[in-house]
Length: 219
Image (cartoon, rainbow, N blue to C red):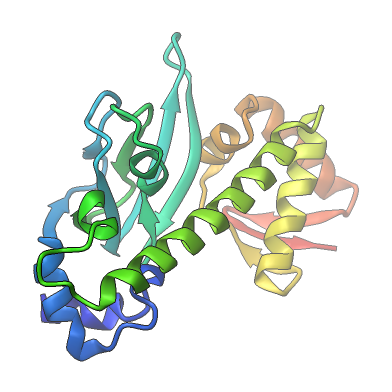
C-alpha cells in the first residue's frame, strides 16, 4: 500500500489525515487494490452499490446505457478521484450505471459502510472521513447541477459553447485540453456525433474557436 501514498495523500477523502496514519486507516477500512485493462468493466449495471472506488492510476468513465443501447457518458474520474460514492451513500441496492476503464488503471475499492461506521477500535480518523465524504458529495452535487444545465441547452451549438466555456474557466486559460475524443464528447453532451462535428467546423469557420483533436482555443 505504501507505494500509493504519494497519490492517496492528495485524495479528498483523506484530507486532514497524516501520512503516518494512512497504513492504520487503510487496514481499518479493509481497502483492496484491483487492476483493470483498458476497456474492462470495473462496475456493471446491476452490481451491488456498496463500494467506493478511488483511481490510483489511469482513468475511468461512468456510463449510462438506455433501453436501445445508446451510451451516455455521465462523468469521468482520473488519478486521485472517487467514483460510485453517491450510489453507496444513497443506499441504492444496485448500480444503475456502468464504470469502465478508459485506460489501464489501478483502483482502490472500499466498502462504504467501513467509511461511515465507527470501528470497534474507535479510530479517531473516522470523523474526518465522514466530514470529507460529505464535502465530496456536495461537490459532486454542484457538478451534477452544471451537467443538468448543460443538458438543458436546446441546440448542439449551445451545448458546445457552454461546455467549452466551462472548460476554459476551469483551466483558467482560453487554450485547454478536454478529456474526450469526438464520440465521447458527443456522448457527454447527449448529441449526434455527425451534427456535433459539423457544428464544431462552423464555429471554427466563424473564428469562434480553434481546435486540433482534443485541444481547443476560444477566440
